[in-house]
Length: 135
Image 1 (spheres, rainbow, N blue to C red):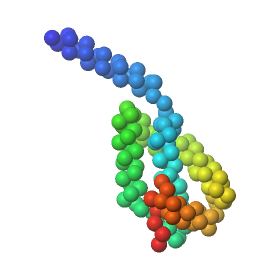
Image 2: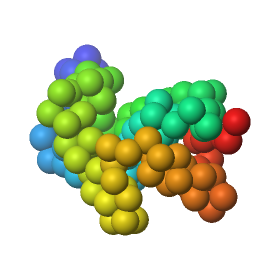
Image 3: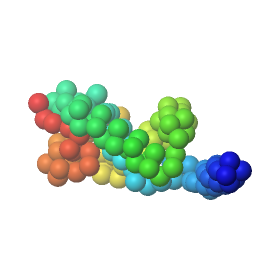
């Protein structure tokens, strides 16, 4: 009986290890990476625009929800933390955010442009807008 349990446990562990190596990096999981972009843009807008505040609790809840979803998809806490804290990923996310702002005809280095974007996103109740509120 113990041998059967040990074999079952070994099979589960081997399957988990194989599945872990077959998973895409979190940066390639759109539901996670895109949501991280929305949070990053909301933070940037609220940091640069004095007329807009972050909805901090909503942002924290969003981040915890993302972590929970990534765990459900089979990612470990270490993998999630490595993705969230990686300087390379932060730089890549900044470039994605700048592209998003430029695609709307705005200058990502301009606080006035970020304020305009923030107001637009709030009015649209977009994924970014729900993380912000006008003062």
